[in-house]
Length: 556
Length: 81
Image (cartoon, rainbow over all chains, first blue to last red; front, top):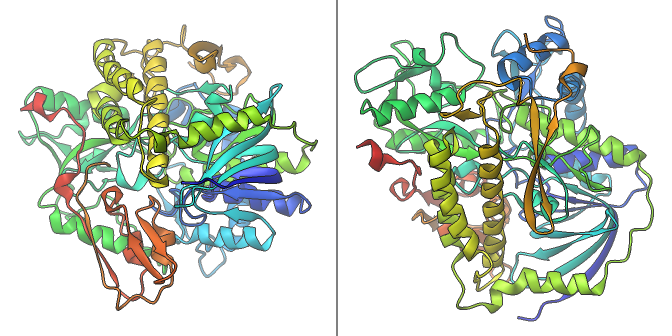
């Protein structure tokens, strides 16, 4: 196979054409139309990503009834557990209505009542949700193209080029049969490639850690890598998730076991629900099933009824498939993952000059949510809105940024990347990347490894990661689809490695992070962020104090 | 997931060549045959049975048939027997 090499130039390269990348591009072009903005998306911009496959809900704050500070206090105490960047979380709440207005202005249908107010469904004392149609990313793509944003589909961004600590571009390749190679000279690069979900749960399967790996390899710092272990209760036959199902859990003896971990309805599933499932199972009281009571016999704990012309068929097909196979409501946890650890500041810039990360690539890395994995982060509707929030902040920062000609990318580095990208095509005796992925799924999937953690169990998981690590340098592919799978397998190994390395270091329990051997929250020693960084090819850890004394909400 | 055995039935006579299924597949199962102007279901082993391709096809040319038994929940069920 002969590979065609191409040179491209742009002011801003955005890797990923989901809701975050598209928002950033639109915001940036509206503020600074002269900039040349290029989106590269490994599937199709407007269709890829997660925003159009989940619930399609936007978090809404009833700011006529509560203040942003009210929500912050609630979040810090109940969800973030003092590990969050409170300034950023406060800004997210304050911008809520402005973000919705912007989205509506960009062409996304945000449902309104006859009186012009948004059509919201209250979900708790502090929050509510708005349901949008699932063509939201398609509307954003249209908007971006109208503003002159260039979009290349089926093109995967791979390694980044950094010169003297400053970004100067990236390499990319077509995943189609031609396998074209691109050297992109860019003054700024934005990673909007989503989180790491290890190809476990279907609807989250597109989050494969591309941007996390690219940033890590470029020398950027990671933060909160240990908060990448979100799990949800799934029906054991259809594997459809049951949102809020944790409120209705019963064991095989018919005992109501939700009461063992909470005495009140929580905003969303806590990791204690996963622990409870494990304890019931290990003590011979399984299986666990849900019972919504006589008033609610349908198969979903939440059955949102909104008019969605585009998305309804998609939702109906999924629901019908699940109902055909789910003979009862037996559930078990499934790891979703959502590692989102690229460390960014309030302008979404990473620790590498000119490199930015947004959306689910940097949710935990931003510090904003604290001790909870990426959206929903026990904060329903925050997934899409966090991507929009960070996309706007990043777009605004880039609109005001200084643009200088990027450093020349050395030919030797280009050659190294060509060799690296296509290596699996020349290694017919190598391993199938699915061998690696299977090992990583065995290491990350079980809840007693990755959610309810303990030193000896994590060591078992780490052995599986080590086995996977031995294989990743020796993978084979017969075409570009396979090449992509090989590189994604590498990203999964890196993410799992970071997860367990950071998790073993955090010797406490906090928020979603749960250790059997360190069950208490330790504010004396662990009001700290764990920073992971590549130093000379070695994964190194350090800690950074949470500046809790400067924040408005303090531990009591 | 990996190692699944989901199936996709395609009726080419119904297909009008709109490419929406090709674009909608977020895991690169579907490729496009530019000459035939039809989708090629090339990597079915990577299908996540999300139904997005089936959902966007207004001609009912696609039917996704999940094999749920081939999906794994990755829990240590053997310990809980």
